[in-house]
Image (cartoon, rainbow, N blue to C red; front, top):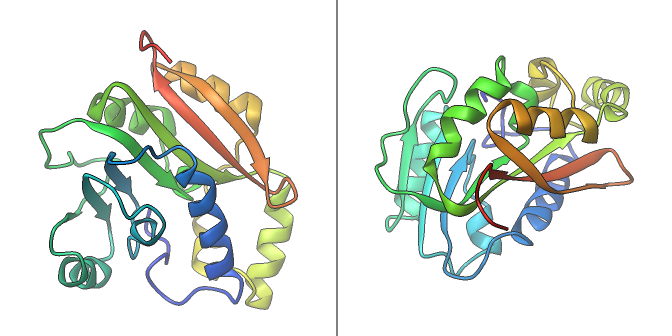
Length: 197
C-alpha cells in the first residue's frame, strides 16, 4: 500500500488511475458513505461528487496533508491496513481498494479485517492487474510508462478464479467481476457472506 498514487508515476499512470476510478464509480450509489483505502489524492471525489461522507486512508503523509486542506469536510488517516486499525466507528456503503490488493502481504487476512466496516448490504470494490499484465507492467515500468515503485511493490497477481477464492477465504462472496483495459486490469465487487444482494 505504499506505492506512489500521490506522487509522480509513469507517463500512463494518470490514465490508468482514471480508468480504475471510472470502473469503481459504477458501483458507488448517490449519497454513499465511502471508505477509500489507499486513497492517494482522493481523485474518486472528482468522479463521485455526491458522496454523503468520505474517509481516506493512505501511507503517504504529504498526500494526506494536501487532501486535508483540499477536502476539509472529509477525514484522512495515516494507516497501514495490514497491521493497524482504521480509527472510525461507523459503517460504510462502499469500501474502495483501487490498485491496492496486489501490494498486500496477507490479502485474505487484511480484507477480513476490513469487511466489518461495511454496512449489511455494503460493497467492497477493488481493482487489480490481471496476471497477463505482469510482464507488460514490468517492461512499462522500466521504460517509464508505468510507475516503477508500484511495479516493484507488486507481491502477487490474481485472476477471476483466485479473486473468488479470496472472497471465500475472507468471509465474502464475489458479486461482480469483469476485466477492462484490454483484459489487463480487472474490477471485483465483494459482499459480506449472509448479506442480501
